[in-house]
Length: 221
Image (cartoon, rainbow, N blue to C red; front, side, top):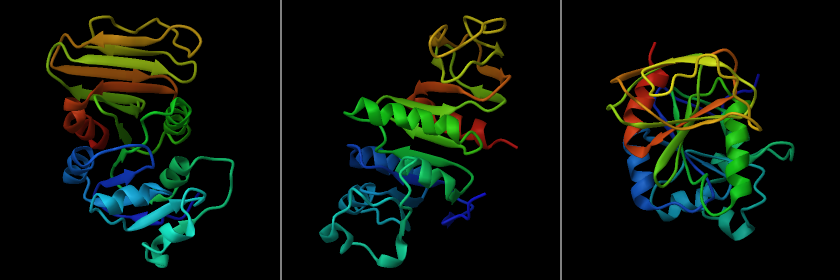
């Protein structure tokens, strides 16, 4: 159990160090108004005019000059090197949901580490925003309200089975695994899609337009 550094009843926009832009951050902040940053993501936050309430990470990407732009009281250094800064942030944020921006981009290794973290922290309701898609870890049960024909991709980061209602290709009876069957480029055939997973490990990827629906589904009582 980790003590929260950021604790709020509102959504949190978490800014990472990968390339992002004002439109992406503004669209996230409009839905999740509390801003936090992972390590060098603090510089992006400041440059875009969204000062963070907390900066969390090992701080290996912030030089001394950069830290002078930050109030020392909001910088929370976690020196261990066993986990990524994204992981450190998810462990120390308590919020209804988190929107991650600046965690996709040019480096594939960083993107893969981000996917790994979403699975390592399955209890955290975190949606990562890319340029065109969003991604989140699928809970044990999920009901998504989406227009018919919406692309729904399921990618396993561990062996997992489950069931679905409302997908063109149902997933019942399929054994998913990262080195075997995956579920990319499925699509909705009903306005409500129901997913049930028998174990953690499945990532859901949707078009960016589905972000409000994903937030509603993940925060539903």
